[in-house]
Length: 398
Ligand SMILES: *Cc1c(COP(=O)(O)O)cnc(C)c1O
Image 1 (cartoon, helix red, strand yellow):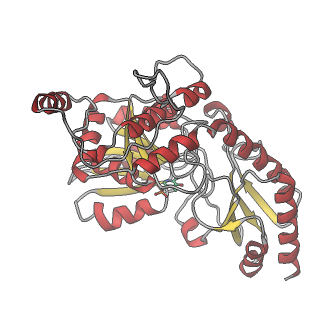
Image 2 (cartoon, protein in one colour; image 1 turned 90 degrees about the horizontal axis):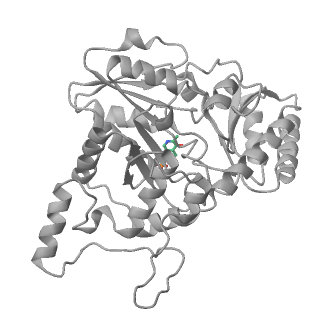
């Protein structure tokens, strides 16, 4: 996997292809979705052999929960993307996050969590982790001194880079060095990079968590997550936790993700090109106070982005000089951008970001009355620009 010398674009086209039928010498290109609950065995000796290999840590399936060939193929794809040796699937990105936390922390332990992480991590903390005696301290990765926050029972440093509201780049190699110094596991939410344009494991993290729901699936029609690691001991813990918690992914969703990921190289590059064009337009508008997009030379994270990323995507945030009511008119006036959560599909999306949520992120300077997040899709960028222009004009006139 990690040692395969072929280009990622090639691996994404050649992983998870159907094997030839020995009887006919023929095969379809893609693997079909192999659906099952029960896995049946020819005789007890075959079952015993499967159980023996499973106990030795091999990926052998005696029951359908872990999934069969389609799931294995998707795990292989995630290993290539993230440059990891082990991958564990989960039924959503958030469940991949909970799998990581439940695998890596025990009662009485403590984790440092970046203040810009995906919002529902706070819900996990409040609804579950606190109740189980696991303590979280939120920290600002670009401001706080980790040395001062680490406690004797700290085990995990959990971050997301770039953050999914303001896209601030974190210095993963520096965080990895800190984690090593204090004996912590560094885990990073890599949904933004989706393994294609950013690889935290290659930069020193031990665990990468990805919502396959976003760019990997790419078509806004499935929910899926993955936890990837290149650490043997951590892999055993994640494996046991995944089994014990009963996480299971539908073969149809695994199949859709496999189908979607074939075009990830094309989609990602086009999202990135379109987003830059949209940024160039927005930068000319007086209503725009600031653009948040690390591929822009004016973004404070640009140097880290150039150093650590091999590309960009369609995500950006725009701080507007418009009062809240006019910002709402702007969002409601957009015709090609759907109002909605999530991102990474082919279509453009807009979300009015809650200033209350941003107040908890120390990267946010609180200096604009409204922030919108845009996902720039695969439409013609000129059409998107025309749409943004008419919506800004309407908001201005409101
Ligand atoms: C969407 C998202 C998730 C959660 O993924 P779901 O599949 O929607 O549960 C996690 N992290 C980030 C950064 C996301 O954008």
